[in-house]
Each structure stands twice: as C-alpha cells, then as structure tokens.
Length: 162
Image (tube, rainbow, N blue to C red):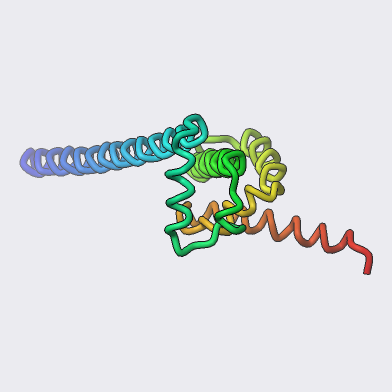
C-alpha cells in the first residue's frame, strides 16, 4: 500500500513539475516575443525622430515590390512620419487586443480601447497600413480591424445619396 502511495505522489509531483515547466517556458517565449515587438516599436519611433533616416526608409520602399497605398515617390518626410505613427498605433492596438483575448484586460476596459480603435481605424493612413501590411500582424486582430472597416464602409455607403 505504501508503495502505491509513494508511486502516486512521485507521479503527481512529476506531472506538476512538467506543467510548471511548460508554463514557465511559454512565459519566457512570450517575454522574448514582447521584446521583439518593443524593439520594432523603437525602430519605428526612430524613423520618425531621426530625419536622416528618411532617405533610408524611402529607398527601402522604392526597392520593395509592394505598393504602399500610394506612389512611393510622392511620400514626403511628413507622410512617412505619419505613416510610421500609424504603424506604431496599429502595433499598440494589436498588443492590447492580444491582452484582451488572453483575458488579461476586462470587458469594460477593452470596450474603451475598442471605441478608440474604431476612431483611429477610420483614418486613411491607418487604413493604408492595414491594407498593405496585414500579413505582418496577428490574423485575429487583422480580422477584427477588417470587421471595423467593413462596418464603416456599410455606414458610409448608406449615407450616400442614391
């Protein structure tokens, strides 16, 4: 009987250890990814803060095969600063949405952020960022923004005279 109890205790201890290890490993991975996101935000902020990087960013855009919502050559420094700010806002909202999905933000708090997101999402530059860089972001968030923009388009089309 004592052997059975000892075996059960050891087994239970191992299960708890394994679950604890997995949880800790997941937390480390999330922290590492969060650091990458923070570094990306810093890089975007630097593009806005440092005028000497304007030429570098414009050259990158011109070398890419992807359109950026308008002709690349027509982007002024101010246009790029605004676009970079919209990218940073998009990333901020994506992170908030992820926290909400993990239940780390309560429903009432999320509703406040969601209302703000709806206002920001209606800006043309934010829409361009959404349209031309969707694969960079978490798909559930992209789908959420798609839904916001679809509702906005429906409202706008119903307001236009027939």
